[in-house]
Length: 123
Image (tube, rainbow, N blue to C red; front, side, top):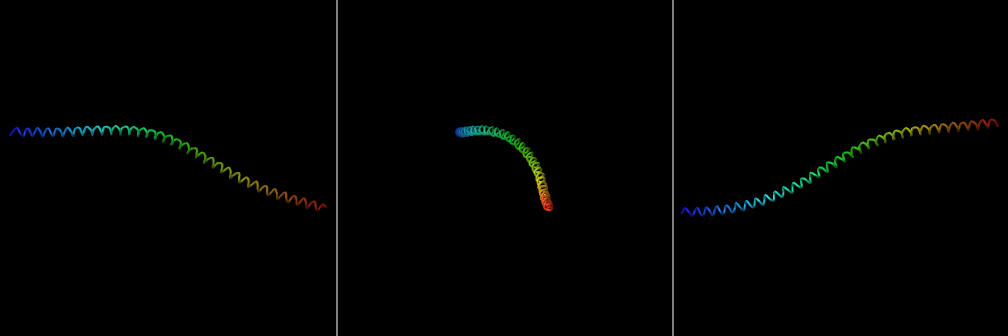
């Protein structure tokens, strides 16, 4: 009776060995799949890192443009304020000249009336 359990034990071990081989093959396939996925993800990571570098460069260029535009905008605002101030001064000068013109007209008008009166008095 000692030999039968050993035979059963060999068959059990043989079946267990077969199962373990199947599991090993399955694990090898899974490992290969995971390795492919890792490689794919590494490639994707490299692409994304490249994009990040490109985007940082573009961001730097845009930041520089923003700085340039901001300084130009500041200069244009200053120029506008200077021109506005100059325009206001000129408007004041124009009003002043218009008043002087009106005063001149009134003086000339009264002088003409005075001359007409003098002429009429002479006649």
